Length: 282
Image 1 (cartoon, rainbow, N blue to C red):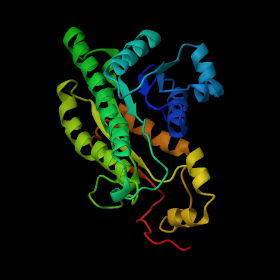
Image 2: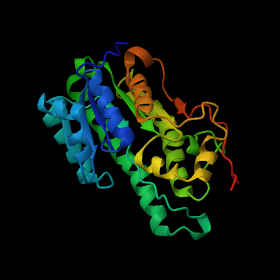
Image 3: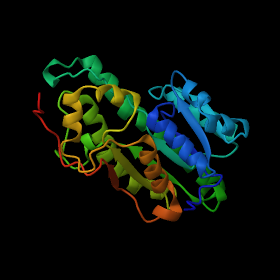
């Protein structure tokens, strides 16, 4: 399917991780121009053959930033524009931190809570705000009738355990992550979809919410039979998702040709999961 993403400039945050890297390669497969954000290391991007080829062809730019720092985020967009040669018109907000050590709320440290909320929520706010600021500036200078503005979209990466439907799943002992993702994909998304059209009449905001995905962290967790049972017991498809399956949904929502009348929606990628087991088999 032609998603009409050729030469559309896509910025993906957290691009060196499992879902992020798959998203980068998915967009490259649709002939998009991609800026891949990383915080500490870009090794995964450099080692991937698709990314390496795209970098040589000037279709991929790696941009470093700490998304919790305003000045870093401003610099990231400036570098992305300079390296790719045109403004960002599709933003994929994928970065996140997750403390894998279970911590009941009454035992959770303030530092853990603050780190998670600052990175996952405030960091996303800073990235989205700068994207909107660039959109507003170009609208003022050039109007909206530009080739680069034919496809303007924001795609957020949420999580099924942190569903925007209040109280659906949640995640015991990881309330910091659950709270950050729920705020991002519910309150922020639903507000943003109504604001962004003031800057571009066809701009859209949607969310992809994965369940278990075969990342390095998930594969390690799945070695524990209790966790594996808990993850799949209410999942009819009886498997976890591949990063590429999530990435394809991101690309579909980013495409104006395919999803041009879709905004404010959350697409669940969880194999039909119906809930969580609070007391899994031993």
